[in-house]
Image 1 (tube, rainbow over the protein chains, first blue to last red):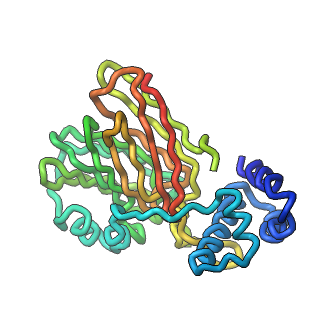
Image 2 (cartoon, rainbow over the protein chains, first blue to last red):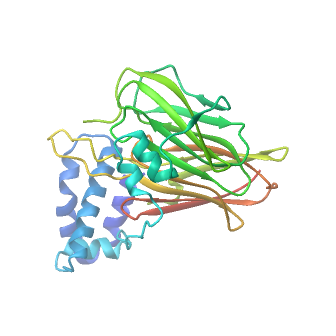
Amino acid sequence: MFVAEISSLCIRNASASFEPLRLTYAPLNDRIETIPLLRQEIEMKIDLNRRILLKGTFATSAIGIAIGAGLLTPVQVLAAWPKEAFTAKDIPGALSVLMGADSAEVSGDINIKAPDIAENGAVVPVTVSTSLAGVESIAIMAANNPVPLIANFNLKEGAEGFVSTRIKMGKSGDVLAVVKAGGKLYKAGKEVKVTIGGCGG
Amino acid sequence: MASNSIKIRAKIKEDEVTVKALMTHPMETGNRKDSKGATIPAHFIQEVTCASAGKDILTADWSGGISKNPYISFKYKGASAGDDLTLTWVDNLGNTESATVKVE
């Protein structure tokens, strides 16, 4: 799919400045890798281009092409994303930034569905459901990940206490669900054994 | 990117809507290295918003700890068949993508 996009991009810019574009992306042709990896590479380059753009240099023709193709959009302000919680190295640290308290009460009303043994730590399906009333948010954490906090789901207008996703786990450890309900924190954990880690390194 | 990078379904049963969505995204943590030992820069979805009729139903803050090509499922009440549901994501590079589906 993405390969098709690159070729359409080439056609669009073919008349004026095809050469610089080919120069920019030429190394990609040499790589015998899967399409997701190619895509990563291209996105790295886009990121690089944006940084040059931010410096105010319009001289590089590759940037001109990127703008022409609509690849560069202004970076949106991510005000709401709690950066500190997502850089905290331990669970209490992440919780205190995210929820305003560093401990939670163990609750039997939270059910975590996750495999006992995950063969591939890069994809561990996790489902959290709770019968607690007035659920405001559900956070999913992996105790032994470099950054424990994986996701925080804020449940609004009519949402039920249920969320399901797939997470990465670096090594075996507890998957924790922290539920904020009625202003209080509740937690539950489930141990997942990982045979191949998924956090790279 | 193409707008078909989000696949989303919303099915209503009695009064409860179950939403399942798949997004296409590399979800790089920024910790991995490529074959030459260079760090692969972080590139992951940070914010996901699901809204119906202008009201947020679920918003999520994510780290790179969510698997590549993320999957999300959730349930909500108070909708009827034919209602629109929109899912929007924003990643750490400022890219954004959105898809709308009708509850069926």
